[in-house]
Length: 106
Image 1: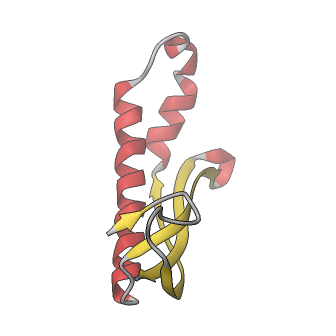
Image 2 (image 1 turned 135 degrees about the horizontal axis):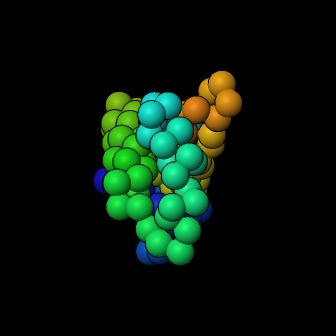
């Protein structure tokens, strides 16, 4: 399945719009409480464990988008938007959400 942030796919026409699809993944409090508490220790560097957690959350959200699109009979998702939000009491959780438009291509 083609999943793209662009509104069109070069060389392909959209035959049918199936609707908006979305996927979300929420990372628990322990990951981001530790991240924000330890940010002073990471300044100037990268935290591989937190990057891995964010990557996994993004992959989960993309899998949900793809599955929802397949369930609608789509073969592509266009106009994809990826958002990262801090949610929960005192910003204790991080949500990764992905949404786009499921389409059938010619």
